[in-house]
Length: 543
Image (cartoon, rainbow, N blue to C red):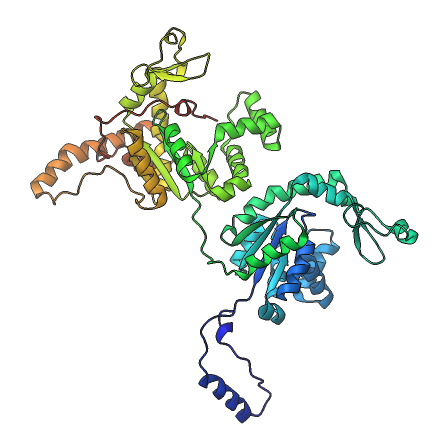
């Protein structure tokens, strides 16, 4: 596969001199060095989207080998191969054939000479993200991914009208491809498959939608979508043009971003800027949780049980809700911005176990006293829901008298929220240290937005911003003075906090404490313009 453009086969049964002469002739030629392109195509789409028709046309035009996982499985069983024997054992026991076995069967089929020489067309597989991941791990790489898109109501109509002839295997459609009405015997023996009803089709479409996003996520750099409602030849022509192109194989960068910061640090304002600059899907755990509860989904019903009993929704369930949202096609195509989550070490661990990994972590750094000042000055208009600040964003005339201060915007409440934030921040910054940039949040919003944008684009590294220039090495007496006046008191404070808290993991706690309370924090520009209040900053979700 890696050398087909410079490879020639020789019949090793010939006389040794005859073989030597043909090898010599080959070696005396100069290969072009340009690999012949052999298509390796995956076609996907919902049931009744037209995959079968387009597979026939692709095979006719390009001569690739059409591979159905069902056909490949049956062939292995019939040939009584080792893989076939394992599959038969599962089938005889009434169990599903596991993904790894199916993929090994596919890999075995793709390795055969016809597929290597002509290329291949894999029909409707992989169906799940797990299957796509495993295919990649086994080295099965496609050159093109064809995705047929058809609205749900048309898919249902196509299926409901299908009728099959059990004698010939031919498929008819009562509207689009009707059987000859004068053939009474044919009309009498046509059958309507049980999985072609509207109810069954709705379940099949739902299952397809649940999985297609995670599949596409593995192939977005070689994927093209096609309108499956067009005339079949028009679809075939556009697919042919796509397959005749040679994708670069380089995946486009689709950002996956977490934004973190204390309450009132300006996350809402920067989220708006990030969405505008990159088109990412903004994900709030609180919004997603309420949506699931409102719609009565299985995850929502679980969460409602905890909420109704007055308990906290566990991290694993919140993470499952986040993971489910990330499988949707808009998130797969555009990337995601996870707002204010994770907040704790447990949530970090849960995200990691769910295989939700960000490319960038934006941490907005604002001194505590400024956070308190921002919150205590906030006022809510109960009539319009608008958020004002008595200093930075004062209300218009006629509104001030009806404004209220939220109970969690008092100095006392804010101090508790900030303390909770600092207790947990160390775990987040430690876990994401190679992807995190601490950004000075006490500046004009435009300046912050520019730095955030540059970091996400990759032109700024994941390091702390606002760090002063490195100074020359100190003299020995200066170093000793620093140790005595700064380092020793700092270490004593850390040990005192350790003794007071008595954590289960003392070394880990002390490491996090020292990171969070490091006296060499980035410089804070207290003279910069204050960020205006944004209602999204206020409505931080505490799921």
